[in-house]
Amino acid sequence: MAREVVIIGSGPAGYTAAVYTGRALLEPLVFAGSLSGGQLMLTTDVENYPGFPEGIMGPELMENFRKQAERFGAEVAYEDVIEVDFSSHPYKVKSTAQEIEAKTVIISTGASAKMLGLESEGRLMGHGVSTCATCDGFFFRGQEIAIVGGGDSAMEEANFLTRFADKVTVIHRRDSLRASKIMQQKSFDNPKVEFLFDSAVTEIFEQDGKVSGIEVENLKSNEKSKVELSGLFIAIGHTPNTQLFEGKLELHDNGYIRCGDGSRTSIEGVFACGDVQDFTYRQAVTAAGSGCMAALDAERWLEKNTS
Ligand code: NAP
Image (cartoon, rainbow, N blue to C red; front, side, top):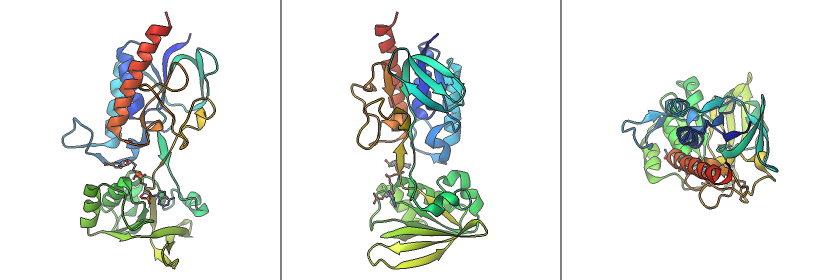
Protein backbone atom coordinates (compact mmCIF):
# COMPACT_ATOMS: atom_id res chain seq x y z
CA MET A 1 0.00 0.00 0.00
CA ALA A 2 1.24 3.46 -0.83
CA ARG A 3 2.59 5.55 2.06
CA GLU A 4 0.87 8.89 2.61
CA VAL A 5 4.19 10.75 2.92
CA VAL A 6 7.75 9.79 2.07
CA ILE A 7 10.43 12.26 3.11
CA ILE A 8 13.84 12.10 1.45
CA GLY A 9 16.54 13.67 3.62
CA SER A 10 17.06 14.10 7.35
CA GLY A 11 18.34 17.59 8.07
CA PRO A 12 16.28 20.21 9.91
CA ALA A 13 13.88 20.47 6.95
CA GLY A 14 13.21 16.73 6.63
CA TYR A 15 12.78 16.07 10.33
CA THR A 16 10.53 19.11 10.79
CA ALA A 17 8.38 17.84 7.91
CA ALA A 18 8.34 14.48 9.73
CA VAL A 19 7.27 16.05 13.04
CA TYR A 20 4.39 17.88 11.36
CA THR A 21 3.20 15.04 9.13
CA GLY A 22 3.62 12.66 12.08
CA ARG A 23 1.40 14.86 14.21
CA ALA A 24 -1.12 14.87 11.35
CA LEU A 25 -1.17 11.04 11.75
CA LEU A 26 0.27 10.49 8.27
CA GLU A 27 2.94 8.06 9.53
CA PRO A 28 5.76 9.51 7.43
CA LEU A 29 8.68 7.40 6.27
CA VAL A 30 11.95 9.33 6.37
CA PHE A 31 14.78 8.12 4.16
CA ALA A 32 17.56 9.51 6.33
CA GLY A 33 20.43 8.40 4.10
CA SER A 34 23.49 6.49 5.21
CA LEU A 35 24.92 9.80 6.51
CA SER A 36 21.89 11.07 8.36
CA GLY A 37 21.31 14.44 9.98
CA GLY A 38 22.44 16.83 7.26
CA GLN A 39 24.99 19.59 7.49
CA LEU A 40 24.50 20.34 11.19
CA MET A 41 26.21 17.00 11.88
CA LEU A 42 29.37 18.74 10.64
CA THR A 43 28.92 21.77 12.89
CA THR A 44 29.97 22.53 16.43
CA ASP A 45 28.13 25.19 18.41
CA VAL A 46 24.87 26.34 16.91
CA GLU A 47 24.18 29.68 18.53
CA ASN A 48 21.52 31.05 16.23
CA TYR A 49 18.87 28.36 16.46
CA PRO A 50 16.07 29.95 18.52
CA GLY A 51 15.17 28.27 21.79
CA PHE A 52 18.72 27.48 22.87
CA PRO A 53 19.98 30.59 24.68
CA GLU A 54 23.31 28.92 25.52
CA GLY A 55 23.65 27.34 22.07
CA ILE A 56 23.65 23.64 21.27
CA MET A 57 26.01 21.30 19.42
CA GLY A 58 24.87 20.54 15.86
CA PRO A 59 24.79 16.71 16.22
CA GLU A 60 22.88 16.99 19.51
CA LEU A 61 20.33 19.28 17.89
CA MET A 62 19.83 16.78 15.05
CA GLU A 63 19.45 13.91 17.53
CA ASN A 64 16.68 15.95 19.19
CA PHE A 65 15.01 16.55 15.81
CA ARG A 66 15.03 12.81 15.07
CA LYS A 67 13.69 11.83 18.49
CA GLN A 68 10.91 14.38 18.20
CA ALA A 69 9.92 13.06 14.76
CA GLU A 70 9.95 9.45 16.00
CA ARG A 71 7.85 10.42 19.01
CA PHE A 72 5.07 11.33 16.60
CA GLY A 73 5.26 8.15 14.58
CA ALA A 74 7.86 8.87 11.92
CA GLU A 75 9.70 5.81 10.68
CA VAL A 76 13.35 6.49 9.91
CA ALA A 77 15.20 4.34 7.35
CA TYR A 78 18.98 4.86 7.22
CA GLU A 79 19.14 4.12 3.50
CA ASP A 80 20.12 6.23 0.49
CA VAL A 81 17.43 6.81 -2.11
CA ILE A 82 18.80 5.79 -5.50
CA GLU A 83 15.85 6.46 -7.82
CA VAL A 84 12.51 8.25 -7.91
CA ASP A 85 9.71 7.86 -10.44
CA PHE A 86 7.23 10.72 -10.60
CA SER A 87 5.78 9.70 -13.97
CA SER A 88 2.65 8.10 -12.51
CA HIS A 89 0.79 8.32 -9.20
CA PRO A 90 1.39 6.91 -6.60
CA TYR A 91 5.04 7.85 -7.01
CA LYS A 92 7.88 5.38 -6.54
CA VAL A 93 10.88 5.89 -4.32
CA LYS A 94 13.61 3.29 -4.50
CA SER A 95 16.31 3.06 -1.83
CA THR A 96 19.33 0.79 -1.51
CA ALA A 97 17.07 -1.66 0.39
CA GLN A 98 13.45 -1.24 -0.74
CA GLU A 99 10.99 0.29 -3.20
CA ILE A 100 8.11 2.28 -1.75
CA GLU A 101 4.98 3.78 -3.27
CA ALA A 102 4.17 7.26 -2.03
CA LYS A 103 1.12 9.49 -2.40
CA THR A 104 3.24 12.54 -1.59
CA VAL A 105 6.99 13.02 -1.53
CA ILE A 106 8.83 15.70 0.43
CA ILE A 107 12.35 16.33 -0.81
CA SER A 108 14.84 17.65 1.73
CA THR A 109 18.14 16.31 0.43
CA GLY A 110 20.07 19.47 1.24
CA ALA A 111 23.37 20.49 -0.30
CA SER A 112 26.95 19.11 -0.18
CA ALA A 113 30.34 20.67 0.34
CA LYS A 114 32.13 21.97 -2.78
CA MET A 115 35.69 20.88 -3.45
CA LEU A 116 38.62 22.70 -5.05
CA GLY A 117 38.95 20.20 -7.90
CA LEU A 118 42.57 19.16 -7.28
CA GLU A 119 43.42 15.50 -7.80
CA SER A 120 45.45 15.49 -4.59
CA GLU A 121 42.46 16.75 -2.62
CA GLY A 122 40.43 13.59 -3.22
CA ARG A 123 43.39 11.32 -2.61
CA LEU A 124 44.28 13.02 0.67
CA MET A 125 40.71 13.35 1.97
CA GLY A 126 40.82 11.96 5.49
CA HIS A 127 44.62 12.11 5.46
CA GLY A 128 44.94 15.80 6.20
CA VAL A 129 42.29 17.16 3.85
CA SER A 130 38.86 17.67 5.37
CA THR A 131 35.54 19.43 4.81
CA CYS A 132 34.49 18.92 8.40
CA ALA A 133 36.22 20.88 11.14
CA THR A 134 34.03 19.32 13.82
CA CYS A 135 34.89 15.81 12.76
CA ASP A 136 38.60 16.26 12.20
CA GLY A 137 39.78 19.30 14.19
CA PHE A 138 40.83 17.10 17.08
CA PHE A 139 43.49 15.41 14.94
CA PHE A 140 45.40 18.67 14.48
CA ARG A 141 46.31 19.49 18.06
CA GLY A 142 49.42 21.67 18.23
CA GLN A 143 49.77 21.74 14.43
CA GLU A 144 49.64 24.35 11.66
CA ILE A 145 46.74 24.11 9.25
CA ALA A 146 44.86 26.18 6.65
CA ILE A 147 41.28 26.67 5.60
CA VAL A 148 40.09 27.77 2.17
CA GLY A 149 37.12 30.13 1.85
CA GLY A 150 35.93 33.57 2.83
CA GLY A 151 32.35 32.91 3.94
CA ASP A 152 30.73 32.36 7.34
CA SER A 153 31.60 28.66 7.27
CA ALA A 154 35.31 29.38 6.77
CA MET A 155 35.31 31.94 9.60
CA GLU A 156 33.36 29.71 11.97
CA GLU A 157 35.59 26.74 11.26
CA ALA A 158 38.81 28.78 11.44
CA ASN A 159 37.87 29.93 14.93
CA PHE A 160 36.80 26.46 15.98
CA LEU A 161 40.03 24.94 14.69
CA THR A 162 42.13 27.27 16.86
CA ARG A 163 40.91 25.21 19.82
CA PHE A 164 43.26 22.52 18.53
CA ALA A 165 45.75 23.97 16.07
CA ASP A 166 48.55 26.41 16.91
CA LYS A 167 47.94 28.41 13.75
CA VAL A 168 45.11 28.51 11.21
CA THR A 169 45.68 30.34 7.93
CA VAL A 170 42.57 31.42 6.05
CA ILE A 171 43.21 31.35 2.30
CA HIS A 172 40.74 33.42 0.32
CA ARG A 173 40.65 34.15 -3.40
CA ARG A 174 39.69 37.81 -3.04
CA ASP A 175 40.85 40.72 -0.86
CA SER A 176 37.62 40.98 1.13
CA LEU A 177 35.63 38.35 2.97
CA ARG A 178 32.07 37.30 2.18
CA ALA A 179 31.36 36.38 5.83
CA SER A 180 29.10 38.51 8.06
CA LYS A 181 30.88 41.35 9.88
CA ILE A 182 30.56 39.71 13.30
CA MET A 183 32.14 36.46 12.06
CA GLN A 184 34.90 38.40 10.30
CA GLN A 185 35.65 40.34 13.46
CA LYS A 186 35.86 37.15 15.55
CA SER A 187 38.50 35.79 13.17
CA PHE A 188 40.44 39.07 12.93
CA ASP A 189 40.49 39.22 16.75
CA ASN A 190 41.72 35.63 17.07
CA PRO A 191 45.53 35.71 17.47
CA LYS A 192 45.86 32.19 16.07
CA VAL A 193 44.11 33.05 12.77
CA GLU A 194 46.12 34.52 9.90
CA PHE A 195 44.95 35.52 6.42
CA LEU A 196 46.28 35.03 2.92
CA PHE A 197 44.12 37.13 0.61
CA ASP A 198 43.98 37.05 -3.21
CA SER A 199 45.29 33.51 -3.01
CA ALA A 200 44.40 30.04 -4.26
CA VAL A 201 45.61 26.58 -3.27
CA THR A 202 47.05 25.07 -6.45
CA GLU A 203 48.56 21.86 -5.06
CA ILE A 204 48.58 19.74 -1.93
CA PHE A 205 51.81 17.94 -1.07
CA GLU A 206 52.08 14.71 0.84
CA GLN A 207 54.65 12.79 2.76
CA ASP A 208 54.09 9.21 3.89
CA GLY A 209 50.47 9.41 2.70
CA LYS A 210 49.64 12.49 4.70
CA VAL A 211 49.40 16.20 3.90
CA SER A 212 52.76 17.91 4.39
CA GLY A 213 52.15 21.25 2.69
CA ILE A 214 50.41 23.22 -0.03
CA GLU A 215 51.30 25.38 -2.97
CA VAL A 216 49.60 28.77 -2.86
CA GLU A 217 49.35 31.11 -5.81
CA ASN A 218 48.96 34.84 -5.33
CA LEU A 219 46.26 35.59 -7.89
CA LYS A 220 47.46 39.18 -8.41
CA SER A 221 51.19 38.58 -8.84
CA ASN A 222 50.89 34.93 -9.98
CA GLU A 223 53.72 34.15 -7.60
CA LYS A 224 53.66 30.67 -6.15
CA SER A 225 54.90 29.73 -2.71
CA LYS A 226 54.99 26.63 -0.57
CA VAL A 227 53.40 26.56 2.88
CA GLU A 228 54.25 23.73 5.23
CA LEU A 229 51.26 22.44 7.15
CA SER A 230 49.59 19.20 8.12
CA GLY A 231 45.93 19.93 7.46
CA LEU A 232 43.81 21.64 4.82
CA PHE A 233 40.15 22.34 5.46
CA ILE A 234 37.87 23.30 2.60
CA ALA A 235 34.91 25.60 3.26
CA ILE A 236 33.95 27.06 -0.10
CA GLY A 237 30.21 26.55 -0.21
CA HIS A 238 27.84 23.86 -1.33
CA THR A 239 26.14 22.13 -4.27
CA PRO A 240 22.47 21.11 -4.04
CA ASN A 241 21.85 17.37 -3.82
CA THR A 242 19.50 17.22 -6.79
CA GLN A 243 21.16 14.63 -9.05
CA LEU A 244 18.23 12.24 -8.35
CA PHE A 245 15.74 14.76 -9.66
CA GLU A 246 17.41 15.99 -12.83
CA GLY A 247 14.94 15.72 -15.71
CA LYS A 248 12.16 14.81 -13.27
CA LEU A 249 11.51 18.15 -11.59
CA GLU A 250 12.06 21.72 -12.66
CA LEU A 251 15.39 22.99 -11.32
CA HIS A 252 16.92 26.48 -11.28
CA ASP A 253 19.95 27.06 -13.52
CA ASN A 254 22.18 26.60 -10.45
CA GLY A 255 20.71 23.14 -9.84
CA TYR A 256 18.49 23.94 -6.84
CA ILE A 257 14.84 22.76 -6.99
CA ARG A 258 12.42 25.41 -8.22
CA CYS A 259 9.46 25.84 -5.87
CA GLY A 260 6.43 28.01 -6.33
CA ASP A 261 3.44 28.66 -4.10
CA GLY A 262 5.04 27.53 -0.83
CA SER A 263 6.93 24.27 -1.20
CA ARG A 264 5.26 23.01 -4.39
CA THR A 265 7.57 21.68 -7.07
CA SER A 266 6.70 21.31 -10.76
CA ILE A 267 5.11 17.90 -10.00
CA GLU A 268 1.77 17.69 -8.17
CA GLY A 269 2.13 16.14 -4.72
CA VAL A 270 5.91 16.52 -4.66
CA PHE A 271 7.23 19.16 -2.30
CA ALA A 272 10.71 20.46 -1.50
CA CYS A 273 12.13 22.17 1.55
CA GLY A 274 15.45 23.18 3.11
CA ASP A 275 18.74 23.85 1.36
CA VAL A 276 17.88 21.75 -1.70
CA GLN A 277 15.57 24.58 -2.81
CA ASP A 278 17.10 27.53 -0.94
CA PHE A 279 20.27 29.22 -2.10
CA THR A 280 19.52 32.49 -0.36
CA TYR A 281 19.00 31.97 3.36
CA ARG A 282 20.44 28.46 3.96
CA GLN A 283 19.99 28.52 7.71
CA ALA A 284 18.90 25.67 9.96
CA VAL A 285 15.95 27.69 11.16
CA THR A 286 14.79 28.61 7.65
CA ALA A 287 15.22 24.97 6.61
CA ALA A 288 13.09 23.86 9.55
CA GLY A 289 10.49 26.51 8.72
CA SER A 290 10.31 25.36 5.13
CA GLY A 291 10.00 21.74 6.34
CA CYS A 292 6.90 22.80 8.24
CA MET A 293 5.55 24.47 5.08
CA ALA A 294 6.14 21.32 3.03
CA ALA A 295 4.35 19.18 5.63
CA LEU A 296 1.32 21.45 5.67
CA ASP A 297 1.31 21.63 1.86
CA ALA A 298 1.50 17.83 1.62
CA GLU A 299 -1.26 17.38 4.21
CA ARG A 300 -3.57 19.78 2.36
CA TRP A 301 -2.74 18.18 -0.97
CA LEU A 302 -3.65 14.75 0.42
CA GLU A 303 -6.93 16.06 1.83
CA LYS A 304 -7.88 17.49 -1.54
CA ASN A 305 -6.61 14.74 -3.82
CA THR A 306 -7.11 11.43 -2.07
CA SER A 307 -10.03 9.87 -0.31
P1 NAP B 1 29.46 30.92 0.98
O1 NAP B 1 28.84 32.01 1.77
O2 NAP B 1 28.92 30.63 -0.38
O3 NAP B 1 31.01 31.22 0.89
C1 NAP B 1 31.85 30.43 0.10
C2 NAP B 1 33.26 31.05 0.10
O4 NAP B 1 34.13 30.19 -0.61
C3 NAP B 1 33.29 32.41 -0.56
O5 NAP B 1 34.14 33.27 0.15
C4 NAP B 1 33.83 32.08 -1.95
O6 NAP B 1 34.62 33.11 -2.49
C5 NAP B 1 34.74 30.90 -1.68
N1 NAP B 1 34.82 29.99 -2.83
C6 NAP B 1 33.80 29.45 -3.56
N2 NAP B 1 34.27 28.62 -4.51
C7 NAP B 1 35.63 28.64 -4.40
C8 NAP B 1 36.66 27.98 -5.08
N3 NAP B 1 36.44 27.13 -6.09
N4 NAP B 1 37.93 28.23 -4.69
C9 NAP B 1 38.19 29.09 -3.66
N5 NAP B 1 37.24 29.72 -2.96
C10 NAP B 1 35.98 29.51 -3.33
O7 NAP B 1 29.39 29.52 1.74
P2 NAP B 1 29.44 29.24 3.31
O8 NAP B 1 30.48 29.99 3.99
O9 NAP B 1 29.46 27.76 3.36
O10 NAP B 1 28.02 29.74 3.85
C11 NAP B 1 26.80 29.28 3.25
C12 NAP B 1 25.63 29.96 3.93
O11 NAP B 1 25.50 29.52 5.29
C13 NAP B 1 25.77 31.47 4.00
O12 NAP B 1 24.52 32.06 3.81
C14 NAP B 1 26.26 31.70 5.41
O13 NAP B 1 25.91 32.97 5.90
C15 NAP B 1 25.56 30.60 6.19
N6 NAP B 1 26.33 30.23 7.39
C16 NAP B 1 26.06 30.88 8.56
C17 NAP B 1 26.77 30.55 9.71
C18 NAP B 1 26.44 31.26 10.99
O14 NAP B 1 25.78 32.28 10.95
N7 NAP B 1 26.85 30.75 12.13
C19 NAP B 1 27.78 29.60 9.66
C20 NAP B 1 28.05 28.98 8.46
C21 NAP B 1 27.32 29.31 7.32
P3 NAP B 1 33.97 34.51 -2.95
O15 NAP B 1 33.66 35.24 -1.70
O16 NAP B 1 35.02 35.11 -3.78
O17 NAP B 1 32.74 34.14 -3.74
